[in-house]
Image 1 (spheres, rainbow, N blue to C red):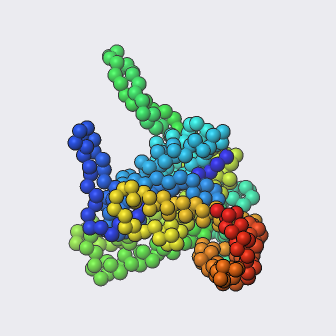
Image 2 (cartoon, rainbow, N blue to C red):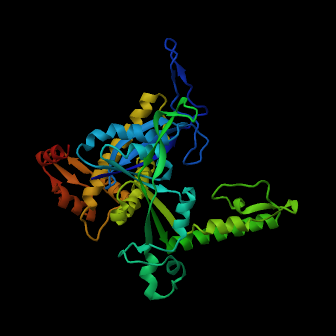
Image 3 (spheres, rainbow, N blue to C red):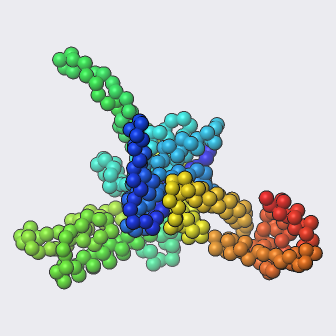
Length: 423
């Protein structure tokens, strides 16, 4: 089985206007520009290009796609995955992504051909019966040992008691069947009551489970954040600084509403606060795997999604993939292919260095800086002298690759042999 994590990011270009669309004079076909205005991950007002990235469970990149900055990122997932499928013959491929990249078409696509999906699911968007089951205090189990546990107990135990420390760091979960009707992309013919034949979109059942997870630690964190937002909202009301209301999930103004008795007066929306607090500590995962038997493994797979964010951070921070200064689509693609290749080489190297290296973990900065400092000096073409000192990284490289990089002097033929082995 191969787990493939997918996510999208975008890169800004320091230009004042987006690329124009190109229309073929002969065929009339429209080719969209590449650098377009879109929702920037860095909240910049510049044109952007979108990147989609697949990686494996070790954080090693598998495939990449580049798309215009104004394209919905959901549309990039299936084409990118189709290009990659050929590498996974005779293996089950598990697609794992966040809720924004887990809409119905992606779930349907990964329900066929020895594929499966694990995606985060908004509890607020579940059907009413499923929501009721979420808050129903039954069938919850501890994630650590699969023993039954009450939801009410998890919410109310004394966290200051040392005996409850393990419980505070633990989570509980339950599995709910959540089959869903989806559009199959086909049409079917049916007869009306009058016997007239008509066509309609064919619907099919998407087999899936929803795993509900509750964490006391997450509940307290979310409540602390909300209390600060409520305090800010109250200050806005008190100082009469409410210019317009907002529904943004991170804006404290979402807790403010107009007083029904006086349209010019604002008050705290207690119903909104109470409704949001119900979901504190909960999150959910949707999957078409057998969650009744593999729930704990599915939760573990989903918990590793943070590694793909680390890939983007390395690209943007350490490999300086942005801002990009290339102009044509070919040059832009070449720039990001160079960055992608560097990321691939680095991630393979990082995995080999840190894998089975008990008690010692090298960070991105330590590895890159360590390699930058590994220089040798040519001494009159007679020998090479190392101008770097010994380090834990150097020792680990010798253990993994056997390059014997801890010497001070090297003969030219020895150095040429080492370079040949590396290249």
